[in-house]
Amino acid sequence: MHEKITSVEVFLFERPRDTAYLGAPGTGEVMIGDRYIVRGFNGTVYPLIDRSLVVRLRDASGREGWGETYGLIAPGAVAALIHDLFAPYLMQLAPMRPDQAWDALYALQRNRGYWGGYLADALAALDIALWDLFAQAGGQSLQGALGRAGAGQLAGYVSGLPAPDRRGRIEMAEAWKARGFDAVKIPISHTEAGDVPGEVAALRAALGADHRIAVDMHWAYTADEAVALGAALEADAPWFLEAPVAPEDVATQARVAAGISMPLALGEEWRTDWDYRPRLEARACSIVQPEMGHTGITQFTRIARMAQGAGAQIIPHATIGLGIFASASLRAALAMGAGCHEFQHSIYTRNAELLDGAAPCKDGHFHIDDTPGIGVRPNRAAFDHLTPL
Ligand SMILES: [Mg+2]
Image: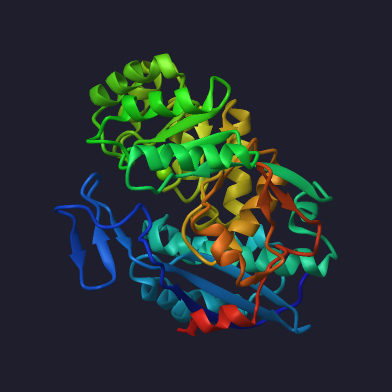
């Protein structure tokens, strides 16, 4: 067990990038100031830089635990919740298991209906840092603390082919295949004039029958459109379809899942097992994609157990950030028996340079060590991109 928490620090991680996530701004896409872009295909706002919120806890022994959550939009909201409420409360609590601490912090506002969103993100950052401390104090890796000690490998799928035309995307996919990766996911935004079946058919022809090809539909379809697209893709046997319809709409999600022949994957925007339960009960997905930056380790493991009980596969999501949450996700995924993990090659590898201990992703796999805790620490170069909040 770690000792009593004595300090809670919050940092904003920001790092410019040459090309925005999901590619350069398209015609008709709206910029908000010089920081955000509203994507035309789904109306969602994205930052033009890599950005996340990072926390550092210290306990009475002087040991450090690190955590990370979303900071894409209005990161000050999460920082305010931590400074105003969670940090002072956490520093009063007697040391306890991190899952008990998550429950104690969540209880503070659950009866007001604060069950997710920015509040859950703040909990996720603290929860990752608490598990980091807890595992280190026990002399264990995170996966060891979760009951699966030892190093290991976890398959990674290549996420996105951010080239401006189909020829470039196919060349990129073939290059990853040559480097030992046998799975790829494309977003609907990277197609010629929205021709998703044509894009998948071209990739199938180039990559061969055994390559796994998934399609992220970015919540942009109605149920009927999603089912029709599933039918149009059948000949090219997609690995799975992801997030076809509005994220809150359980009945429509279930309708799509029942209407397509390939697996449906959902979950990157949900925070807790309370979000997953009605979807799993409604058979709205057969693959769950928990995002560590939203769930933290406590909810990630609860979601994984719930999914396994419902017969669903676990293929975690990977968002934009420094990569502390990515390391926690890889280790928790290894412990919970995930089959594969998203590999955000345009983000993960670049920012892994700023961390000591990040798991390399090569030959189609993440190579995960059994070092203590979550296994990563920001290095000196990282602090050029970390601003105390
Ligand atoms: Mg997605």
